[in-house]
Image 1 (cartoon, rainbow, N blue to C red):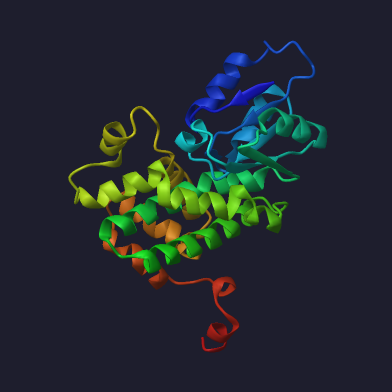
Image 2 (image 1 turned 90 degrees about the vertical axis):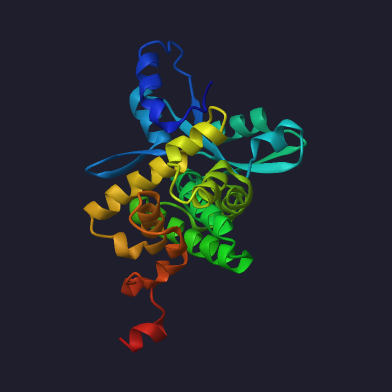
Length: 274
């Protein structure tokens, strides 16, 4: 049984080093890694990377899980997404404890997309905190962020289930990350630094060796959206990326709605007045 918990940029290399060394035909994997690879065809999630390199089934574990709270055994829950039910049950049995409750769902890409994309939104939430815009503004960022997570997930992985977004891996994880995660922390610090520190510098200064996944994920997502001409359909993701890369001032985090909306995102009333 293989458990992957490394930053996503190292996953493919680890798989290449393992290839040909797994002699047991019953080997299975689970990924806790939040991130993706991109190419001309779009996104490749870590479960796909692991399965493709090693030829084994890969489940995922995602959820509203701040590590230091789990370490002191405070109650939390997580989601195991599986494609083979028996493997899902095995992983649940392995990870479940009285203080760490596991729910299994028949959906692998859904939890992964939630776990990956939430880090972009959390950077935006941190910017709102740094700007001292208040809870109403932060709630709006979380809401539109969830909307864009759902839309992008279904655009590239049509099998994603609606119910997934109401599991721990979905809205619960997004809320937790926007209030307590390291991406939120660095988003806030970026604003407070007033352009004098980059995210690379903030990562080294604040995270004690941990990696800041949201910036890299934001650039990867934006690369794909630009290539397929869908940037304006994801105004929050696009605005956060432009702020990250110095093309917009952080205060414009609340101007995301000024980007043109697609007809699919508009209410029937708004479409009637076009």
